[in-house]
Image (cartoon, rainbow, N blue to C red; front, top):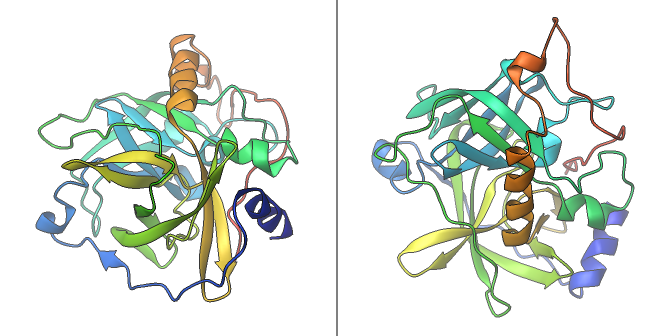
Length: 266
């Protein structure tokens, strides 16, 4: 946690955390309306993260969610994306065709600022999600005067349906990093952080890591537009991992490094 607070010191003076408002559970089909593009990225027996469609066949999530330990990707053939998953029923789901982490992401890095800034991964789906089922979200920069955010995510203790924190705030924004007080936990890694622009929310960050501070949660993410462009370029170059690269049970594509960004325990 000390490393996280040090990053916060780069962004904004620490202020007392406010009590968090209750999360809204998106249970019914009408509750999910508008959030269908957010889903669960399932990694076999490893667990899950949250991801979001930015194109019918592209899911944005955290880089550390695609990292399997040692210096390797998780096997792509063990993974699925389940859009709008609620109580065991998904609006759409797909296997993974290819996945890649940002070229600047080093799972062995001890520089938390750099790790968070590049903690993005992109999944290409084997089966695109129809636009009539889920409309992908646009990626946008966070305006310097923006304050109000929202996060839609899964998490420990609320695994079965999306939860919406519609009243969180920017706590700091500098050097490609964004700090916010949205209610997130294990499983929320990769969740989209939204700022409303006009009639539709745009993704301005992803949840990378966070933890409890005082009576609330302090979380961190990265600025997106340039980083997402670099991530798409890496995917076009054929970087990353694909199922046909898993030649034998347990085989994985190697990454550099040997550590990983971690979501902090409360």
